[in-house]
Length: 445
Image (cartoon, rainbow, N blue to C red; front, side, top):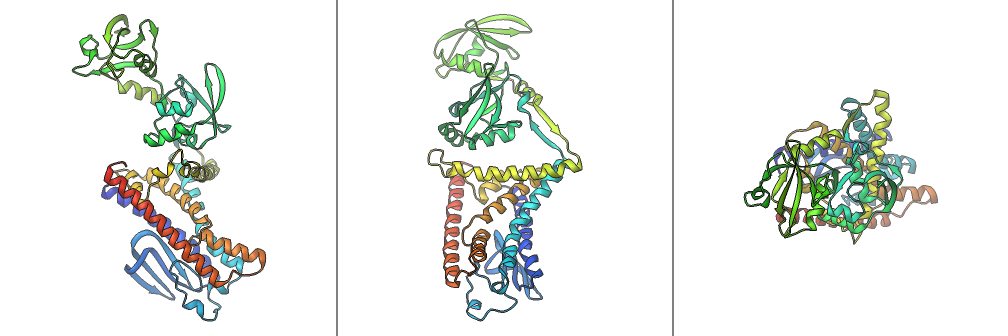
């Protein structure tokens, strides 16, 4: 973890927290509700800085886990119920009509959603969108062992995920983990198959969520290991392997399969050296290897061929920003399919602040920063809508209940629910932080 990574994370969270709390603060003020505190980060026992302006104390806490506005007459995470024992005052939250209280509570998630929309629209307009187009994978994909467990095969061309066209590699690698079925072009035929959860578990276990398939590339030798059979057999840098025992081999994944069937055996390689065909006898080791590395430049060039940049006009970027926001929200909802699945064990991959900071770039990257901020803004909106007491969604549920039944939820019920919610959230925070610390100690980040 570097100071630059920490800086980017804190800056992003600060922007999101301040704007989220403004989403509560502004409608509260518009409805003439007293706001006692407006804090960036939490301030148990003491704060880094504070200043009272009017009825509101503005401050910065020392615990960077979020922030809050303390609204008079509201049961919140502070559990300050002394004021609630007194008769309700006109400027208190509890005195306001249910529809006003609903708007106040929905203000934060509304700001988060529109902020993400604004950022994604701006990124699409000013930077365009660069991605790897699956339609340009002319030779199909090369698949890892974990990807094969999911049901993919090398040579497949991915067409659809859950019935929707698969256009971009970057999103498809993630969406496929949450999908029910995938449609590919295999051997000239369209085939639809269910995504195997064992494969998803293998992808997550091997930390290759973005690597389980890639473009195929030819086998061109780059360097030879000193003691490998490739060196002793006379192979040279630049040699291209095109066959094994007379069987054509066009791509690296095909060579791996062929060599795995001839461990500890001699084979005859067909190679091209300076465009001239040659044959070479060589011994395959007990791991199915020959002792060389491939030319990464060749693989990179194949990968770059699939890269495209799509530009958007101002009017085109606005709906595109909305689409990106909804896509991120949908993905976050779908991820619970693997997070709480005992087979995929996605919960082991859940990261807290430490894990997130480790994923930040080690140099300032504003495009990544704003993309991350937009994604995290959607996440905060979704998280706060979960109907758990202690979150905005819990308050919304109780308010909607009052609007539907015409009867307010008893104060004691609100207080008890809030207490249970706070305890649950604190426990969840301890688990997430404990998981982060364990990963950090064991070097599994």
